[in-house]
Amino acid sequence: MTKLPVSVCMISGAEATRIRRALESVAAWASEVIVVLNEEVCDGTDGVAAEFGARVFREPWKGHVAQKNSALDKATQPWILGLDADEVVSPELRQEIHEAIERETNAPGHVAYSFPRCTQFCGRWIRHGDWYPDRKVRLWRRGQGRWGGIDPHDKAIVSGRVGRLHADLLHYSMESLDHCVRKQLAYSEDFVRDARRRGRGISLAELWIRPLWRFVRAYFLRLGLLDGWQGYSIAWLTAFHTFLRYAKVRESTEAGPKPCPEHPGR
Image (cartoon, rainbow, N blue to C red; front, side, top):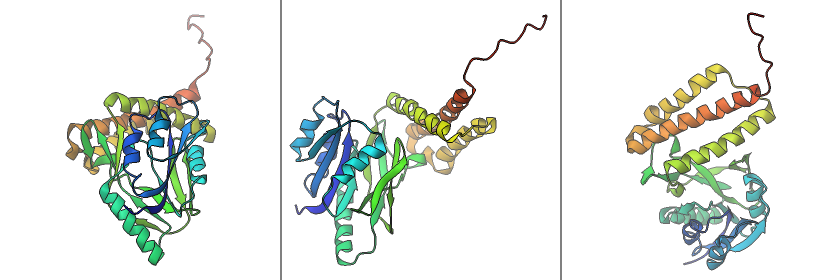
């Protein structure tokens, strides 16, 4: 298979059980694979990456955005493909990427491309609700984009016109309900830190209305009901995550010792 002028840039923690699938989906056609590995990882992830010819770098954890930019800075190819350890480039998406790069070589028109990401949840590929199409910009010309956003929700910031591909990036992120809840708990802490940094408060109206709205939007307006019990679960989990984030901001702003009220009889 002809190699494309693409640097696949990845970051990883202890992902020996999942990263193999991601690497298998790109190693045969990408000219370069870069993996920035957390320095404390000792589960064999580095060995799996080396099997596929990846350039592996061990670095202290700096946060999602900074760590991804560190991998980006090591790239040498004209095009960058950002990939997570729990993602797989489908054969259909690989073909679209090949065609897009060929077009841009002959007649440049875009500096980046976005494509949908499809997540597997409890044995089902989710194609409705808040989780799909979950379109991401992950392919761009080197020098035309950087990672931005707020940890852990990084996103590509590019300077120029963005085209659209249509095949799915496959996402094996949510292994179970327990896994999903654990991730929501961790993400809620990041939301609280960011809210406190910006001095943002949460009103009681937001605490009541926003979680309900997220359920209605995900399940009814975005047709999560077509994804069976998994779609129903996702809608409730989304609503719960919204409530949890906002309630924890309220908790953090109201926390602290309060004087004990005097007894009314005194």
